[in-house]
Every structure is written in structure tokens, then in C-alpha cells.
Image (cartoon, rainbow, N blue to C red; front, side, top):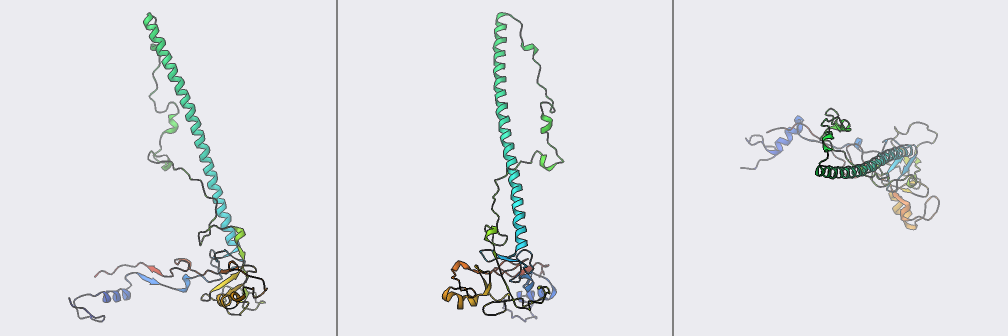
Length: 295
């Protein structure tokens, strides 16, 4: 088979390039999208996706609004406490069932002993020619509603009571609250207050959502944008550019505003990332499935 060029239209072979071109023009095939709407702004909360009013940052550099992250932690703690209550309830139920099983086993031993004694007594009386006591025994009931069996009957209209349903055992819940972005353990005391330096007029009381240039570096005066890597200084919470960190701060490891001594742990890189269909700093491409064009 001969090789066809990209713009070959006179051939009887429907080439891959032609198929791809027609699919793009006709709306068939997977559509790959990449837009700025899929990437959150650097100063926006990772949960609410709005500019932070009271920003805090985790030791890993993920930015949250204090109200949003506190609400998340409280809801997770309430969920964990509910799971702990259910687990404790299951443990008490297991202990009660074990106690009932032990009592039933003791009763069974007593009944077997009494039956054995009665059988020995009736055998001795029969040997002596006395009346048999076995004739007075009453037969056991064959009803499925006797001896408490009515409470154990399956219900075919309730999913949890069907014969095929098996009761699942709850595992002891973990009391640790994890970060919704990084998945690492998160505590309120680990959150660090962040202080952004406004690049607009301080007397302007308008909302920050509509402003493109909201903050600046307090040292160099550079405007902070999504494409400008930033870092948080732990002692004061000031947000500076990575360029300021590399060229100014790391020379003497001194805070440029207060003059205090800094360490490597005091410089927290501010994480930038995506939301929605994107993942943080990893993959910023969306793929939309469309009808496939058949050759």
C-alpha cells in the first residue's frame, strides 16, 4: 500500500490524518480542552475557590480560608465521632451476644445432664418393672414462630434483612483529620496565618474578586499573579516572590522586613494548582468524550 500525504484527497484510502481532520470539523471524537477556568487563582481558597478573607496556609503550602477549613475540620470531627459511636455500639452488641451465647451453652449442658439423668432413671425403673416416665414427654414444637424464631425471620422487602445480606463488621475509625488537598494529617494548630500586601488603594472598599492585580510582594513590589511562584514566611505570614527568596533572603537567611533569623522550614512554597477537572500541579488537561466517527 502506498503512503499518502496529509492533503491527499484523491485516494480511495481514508487516511488517519483525514479522519482526524474530519472528526475535528464535524464534532466527533474526544475533545481536549485547557483553559484558565480550570486553574484556581493563587490567592483563592482551595475549598471555596474564592479570594481568601482570612487566609491560612498548611505546612505543605496549600492555601485555605480560615472559615472554610475550620468548617471542614469540624465536620470531619463530627463524622469521626459518629463513626466511633457506631463502633462502640457494635462492640457492646458483640459482648452481649457472647454473653448470651455463654448462657445458652450453660443451659444446654444442664439440659443434656437432666436428659441423661432422666434416661438413666427410666432405664432403672424399666429394669425393676416400674412405670416408664418417657410417655409423659411432650414433643418439641415445629412452628417457626415458637421460641423467639419470629424475630429472626427474613424480610424480603427490606434489603438489610434479606437472607443473602451479611452484616458487615465496622473497623475502628481513625481519629486523624486529613487535608482535603494533600491527604496528609491536618491539625488546627499547624495552620499559619497569611498576610497579603494589597496592590490596590487601601481606601478602596470594593470586592477583590473583580480585580486582576490584587496583591504585591512587600519587598520587591512585584505584582503577584498565577504565573509568579510565591512563598510564605512563617514568622510573619508575609507572601513574597520566589525570586525574592532566591536572590535576597537565602543570602543571609534574614527576614527582609523584621531582620529576624530564618531557617529552611520558615520558607513555605505557596502551592498553585487546579480545581474541578484538573489536579494540583500535575495535569491541567480536560478530555471530553464525543461520538466516534466510524470509517
